[in-house]
Length: 615
Image (cartoon, rainbow, N blue to C red):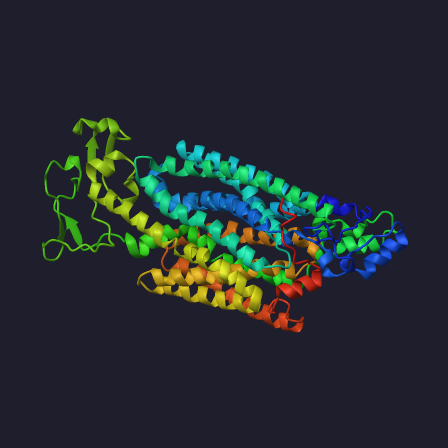
């Protein structure tokens, strides 16, 4: 991945001052600890063999600037996560805004399917490109593609064109998942053998802040004067800004490589030493075994493939749930249908707004004729029919249409982005819908908020205690309980979503750091690409399954869509149990403890302060 590793036959420069030591204030050096290199190959090889402690081998993980790189990758990923989740936060607003259709749910879920379709294949190449050409350079390329996709999506929304929106999501998907592969590889490279789970936890935590900000901000912007178009255009602004962070990563990475080479360090730890010791036997050390090919995934073992299947099913009840969480929460808790046992005093007249002309149109009970009690979580009653033209008001110039003729008005006919509905005729309905969507946006952020707060300490804990496969199994079990509760209960969604957040955080904290433990180091980027590719097969299929189940259930999410998520979580539990069993047979690598000392002993990492090596 790093081009300087290919020149392993280069001779190390002669030193008179040992690596990691500097002269004291008087310019003297402790000769007892000094490491000399002879002027001939025999002396050189003998010296390397004799003085081969871990302190000789410097790596990026020994630089304090690794935290700057982590912060920059988080910036890039936060913008991508924000843009990815915009449609999910604006589910109801899109339903009101887009041209009326009985297939809205299918059209909406296709936004996520077309995003995932290219990523069934591309991460395989993206991971291979990362291994071949370098993660920082690939990160900038992928971030640029994400920005272009975000722009196209916003153009499609502005023109109410599903086709252009699909194109934008497709282009967005061309870069977004490979962007994750590059980010994961950069983190592995800069934190190799040293707090890698902690670093990945921080990366996930900060990146998921993008989803949280989106869930809170997008409904507010869409419900304001800015409208839904302004809410979508925030995505292109953020993704364009992230390009500067991606470019800075390239600069920092190149400076680090240059200074590590100058000081005699190496990013790949022991490879340099082995090459230098073999320099007299092989003048062309770049052997075929060092080459990385796409077909190398065939060398991956059963442990890696079990992790991949687990990722497929467990993420199937996490990310697709978030795609439609706003709709589920509105249907289940915050904007339930109006009571069927009530009717309006004047069924063919507007309920609230300037077209009401001061006429009171209350909701009455069918059985008693008294005022109907409507729960705060229920929608107000709508007129049973509407027949109004622009001549009815001198403010009709603000309306989207010249006439509104609905012999049988339904909730799908009321588009609250149209001034006719939210100001003139059904102001009470639209006002309550806006408040409910904003509340749902806040509540659906709970899992990601818990993930943002808990991922770093969970990552640090995993580095200390291991038990990755065991934690993955427990997380899947908790997800099963969460979706069972959502399916059969009508209690507050807060507690189940807290459980979703805990389970998601625990699972993510162990699944991705487990990938490098199941493959050879040089295949890390390819491995991340393969698991991301398989994950996206599920993320392409699940939205279509959700839309089909929704329509077959009478345009309802509860309970059948939740049963689908339960099934995925249950499969995750079974796969986790098998993974634990095989891990015990294979030395317990996934459930074992990886300490900093053990990692440095195994890889030759030096515990070096970044005082002299800071890029």
